[in-house]
Length: 253
Image (tube, rainbow, N blue to C red):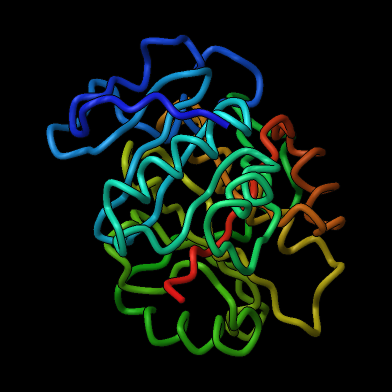
């Protein structure tokens, strides 16, 4: 495993053309171009990596061995700074030969450029605002405690929901954004546990996808690799499944 060490804060992530290759959508959509002045990046040997310094999160795309090499380089240059990383599948195993890597979780970065087929229940979806944040927080706490994005997050541009005939919230979801590029990212889609299987989540996901594609030209999301129902839904909505990733922590002990 080798890493090409370039001066930090100057590496251009787009010199190798990786963003045009299958499996590199996270670079294409997730990394701002042109390069932000404060972004720290590494590039070389068929991979690129960039650091979300406030979160201590390193992102990488490309060949797993090269991505692991860049992650190792980053960890040596910024000791104690990088607490977690996301990279191509297999990065965790290769990097784990050199650093204490823990809690690996396989993900798929999915994306679409197309509006999905119209779902009949999309007409029930309404936009929510700051006045509904308390309601959203309670709903997510009950029906999706591990939600990735919560009400009031600065990354969220829109919350949407579906209510039953009595006005009770039965499904919700957010249009968030990828931190470096600002690209649209669907997040925190949740359905009332007692009403799952009735198409509410599908309707909300379809509505949010349509909203993003019409406004931005595309939509992205993260899916747990072993979530079979979500996999079927996102495939039906037209989301590509070409970008398997792994996220893990780098232990300080």
